[in-house]
Image (cartoon, rainbow, N blue to C red; front, top):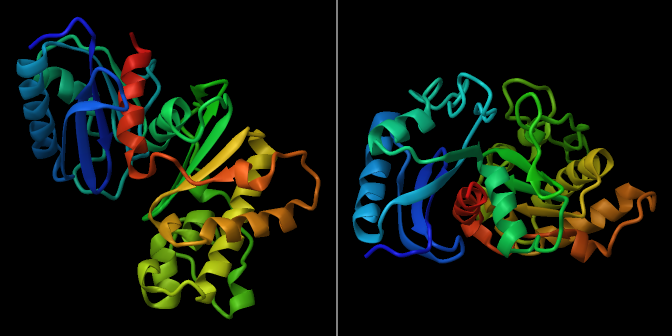
Amino acid sequence: MESTTPLLAGIEAGGTKYVCAVAQSPEEPLMETRFPTGPPEETMAQAIAFFREAMEKYGPIRAMGIGTFGPADIDPRSPGYGSILTTPKEGWGGFNLVGALREGLDEPIPIAFDTDVNAAAIGEAEVGAGKHHRNLCYITVGTGIGGGFLNDSSPLHGRMHPEIGHMVMPDLDAEFGKNTNVCPFHASCLEGRASGPAIQARWGAPGSELSEDHPAWDLEAKYLAAGALNLTAAWSPDIILIGGGVLQQYGLIDRVRREFEQLAGGYWSLPPLDLYLQTPALDQRAGIVGALALARRLL
């Protein structure tokens, strides 16, 4: 049944799973599906079938937002806009999501294409922990580490998009008698030192299997606090949200705040750290809510 309220479509295009949804309001999807990210043609076919079914039920889609794993070409002026760039994910390098969706749906739907972390930042800014903040940083710590930034409520885009996971980090492992870095490109970067795979490589078990009092969490907090401090110095956000699977560890955000306070040395005038450094309110929903919000911004 077609509604007078515009129908929005969203895709959280993750390296592991795809989430597709339609909604009239981003925080309340009318239909949603999720499936593993497979080869691009197969993945697009599943997404297109879902949106066709949704249009039969709710009427035409007026706008679509996509938050994708990267690196990706998110510059609307670029001939390759909508494409995944160099990636180790087999088959996806050079694949154009936007083109494939437009062709498959055979509809002139306006499509906003951005990174998954920028989409998550928008979701949190509009209906989550970042409400009422115009300058927001969203960090996700999981298989990799990525960051999204809103500058005056708009996603920050440069020549490409920010890759904060690859900011240089001091070697804090030595203090713990370790030397673990899983990034194949850099000698010591945030992703190589503090991502989920780094934790597992360093301690021989995934973070989900390590106890609350394991020394892994003191070291993890030191790396994440150093990253947050660098972002504070470079971008001066109103709030930093740190999410992703690694932040599911109870008490980790409190450790990050303590380390951050020590590193900051009282230099910056900041809100109380329990307000400045937070975990996302939408948790695992931030990406798809943000993709739908990207769509709404096109109208």
